[in-house]
Image 1 (tube, rainbow, N blue to C red):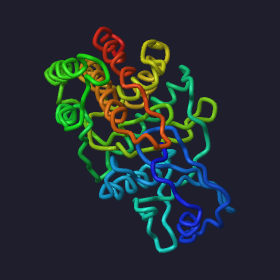
Image 2 (image 1 turned 30 degrees about the vertical axis):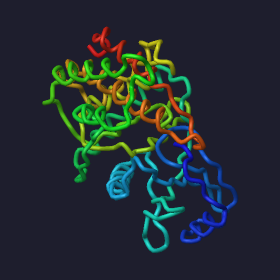
Image 3 (image 1 turned 90 degrees about the horizontal axis):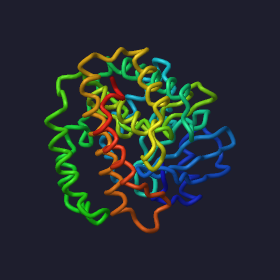
Length: 317
């Protein structure tokens, strides 16, 4: 979450008047994250999240996300639905951006994941994968393992401006990973970004899975390695927490058993996951506007994760 687009009180009050949510009391921008503009909205009837979708989220994809959230909510997964206004319209426009008013879920994101919380997150992710098996929607994933070579080649990527030699390092790793991944392992709808700040918890219980704007059709075990790369390392990517990493895998496997083929290819999938976030962080590092209320994140923290996965394939055994 972040704030790129600023919303005036007048525009926000007019927006809320379309809903049966009472009058605006307060609005506070959320600085964490890097994708969309987000606000916590308090009204006379309760609390909500307002999201304005920025350039990385295509407006044409929003019906897919809305249907996915409705599908998961109908199966009792703790996800925030996009709320319709009085006319039944969920996808609106505000300050020139597509926008939605979204349910607020209780809980806080774990700043320091523990073994118990990682296990619970693994269970929740596996359940999500299982409950999406009969979801009819599909969406390509340009940031998944198969799309990374094309993403790395886009204009405006100057890896060496971040660290000398990084461009060659990325090119070599992508070629090696592409030749190593087992492309026949199971696919389905994935979250694609299940970091600790996209999981809400009360104690050791998951109360919310949020920010599905990278959800797409891709490899289920790759999605798990994305989560592993986010939960099992310190912020700098230099210290691996084996207890947290193993608990996440155990929790997932307890709800959806990983096949031998998935486990065998997960070291390569994890390297692809590390490269995916290193590259998107690198893009944001190079291109985030100076006046954006957003915290840029260090791309080299994911280069360190890549190096760990290259030399420690046994963490997924």
